[in-house]
Length: 155
Image (cartoon, rainbow, N blue to C red):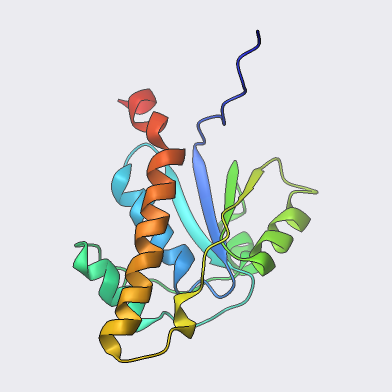
């Protein structure tokens, strides 16, 4: 019997969403804090947005400061440092389509993790924060599952 193929351990990971203002910066920070020396981690958006203050607040609850994050597009990232990633994790359909276009000329794996955009949440401040916390918890769970072998490999 042949064992199922496991995803290879990446060296450089790019998280991507629509505007690089909520989901991808959260995921970037979570993974970077989990493996500060084992992986190179960045984030980008299909389009450029503005950093969301609710995302900043939720990450601060975890002791992670993303307030200095500057939303970046795929094109800007490519111009500044190149797109030298071996894994692109997309969190929104628009970013996924853009990543698939890029992999025509890049040797990168693409994984799609459909992730709800909490910025559409309605209600008072606490209800909105709860929507962002749910997205953060979901991302953290997926990251832990996907990258559980990285720590062992780098340790």
